[in-house]
Image (tube, rainbow, N blue to C red; front, side, top):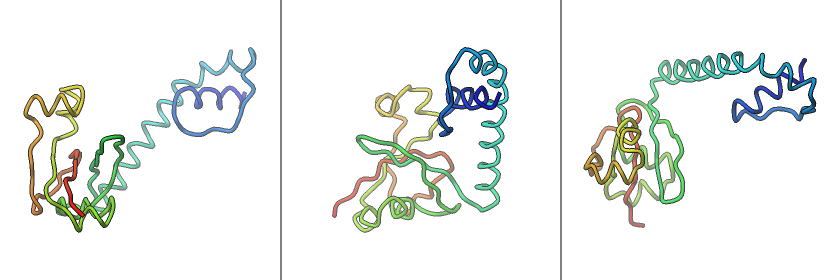
Length: 141
């Protein structure tokens, strides 16, 4: 039964799980655990949001040419502060930030699509980063 639970979580999420035997017996019961996997992941997301909110943090998404990831800053911090959480060189050589809200990227499909739809705006050093902003930092070191 435990193998079935491990298989369900391994296929449902990106959470690392211990290896399990993918045999017919385990697979028969693995489908029973799929709803449980969704509930657990939803609870983990809600817990992460609650912790960030209680600590007074915002999530932002710095993007580059090859990657995008999530970062956190305190509410009220500027684009330069956000750049500094990624790398100190970005804060030192900060010029501007291309900013777009995450939901506008979802509507456009891609960052480039949001840019073509004129949803991306240039902001300076004093821009206060909002929760869910996607930032492309322009800098010169």
